[in-house]
Image 1 (tube, rainbow, N blue to C red):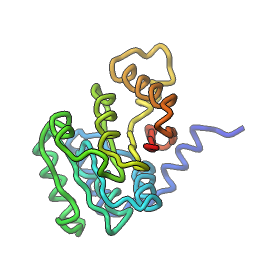
Image 2: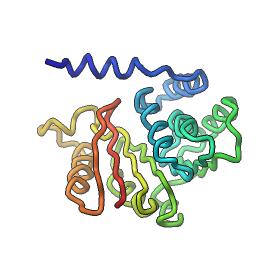
Image 3: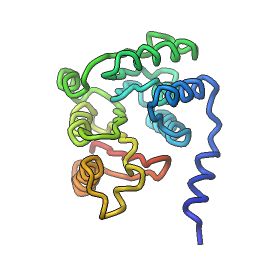
Length: 208
C-alpha cells in the first residue's frame, strides 16, 4: 500500500528550486511569512506553461516566492500582484529585481485585495492565484473567478489548511470557510474543480 506521507515528502524533495527563489523563500521565513512549497511553486509554473497563461493576477505577494515561480512558467507572461503589506511588497520587488526579472513583466499593487479586485477588468485574465491562509478566501475566490476569462483558471493555494479540512472536528473560521469554497465549486456546473495534493493543497477552478 502506498505510504501517503512518504509519497508527499518525496514529491516535495523532487523539485530543485532556483537560487533566486530560494533567496526569496529564506527571506520569507525570516519575516515570518509562510511561502508556498517548492512543489506548489513548480506546479504553478507548469500550470502557466501548459495553459500558455500570459495575463496573471496574484492575490497575496508575500515576498515573491510564488511570483517568481509564476513568471518562470512563460517568458511572455505578465503578472499583476496585490499585497496589503507595503514592506513585504518592497522586499518582493527587490528580490524579483535581483533575480534578473524585467520590471516590465510585473506590476505590484499595494492595498487591500478586496478593495482593489472589484476595480479590475472582469473576464480578462488567464490565471488568478489566490494565496490566502485566513478568513476572506471565499470572497477572494469569487472575485478571482470574475476576473478569469472563459477557459481561465483560478488556483487557490493552502486549500487543505494544513490537513484540517479533512478533519470534521476542526471548526475554526479559516477551515470552515475553505470547506465552503471546496463544497460550493465542487457542484458548480460552470466550474471544473480539482484538488491537487501538493504542499498544502492547490484547488484549481477552470471557468467553463
